[in-house]
Length: 211
Image (cartoon, rainbow, N blue to C red; front, top):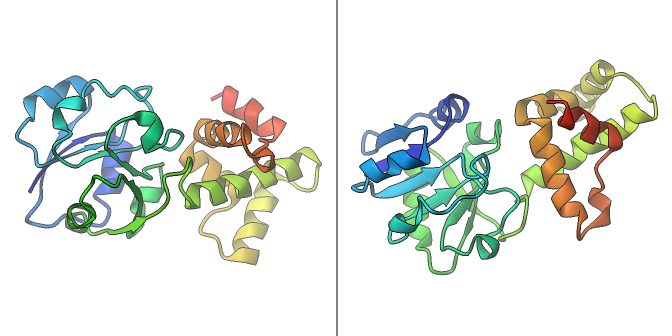
């Protein structure tokens, strides 16, 4: 199977972190325009979909094939195309499980086959903004910023306490650096429109705007 993957170096490294099956050949591209040179691909993975402002123009010619897009804040319904949403926030692609939202028109077995070639198990979740684990992690980071605003402790001490007390792989502020505060703030702001519990901390928004 031949895949064409639009990505940057960081996400490329993460996508390869579990290895790739010998049955899978990957064409790496860094610009949407390069898709035009890879019409023979069996599937498309656009890991920069959000970075490119959800532009779908380069994907419309591939919709008869599985098309994966890294879309955290837009659902399949909002995108308006039969794509497969994948959680590809920085840090999350290193896992053995890939969160995906699949349109009813998409062959789930085909999705599972493609991800298995990348040594990942597909975990199908509802087509909601933020998937599941990004929502949870974003709220952990947000609560840490609320605690920082209230002078409960320092960033370093909060990170240490969370790692030792909960056995998390990272402290909330370390997680924020890996994922990117703009990503965290963007998701929380989007979720806050309909769910007030996702109100982003003022300090988080401030630091995100400075990145």
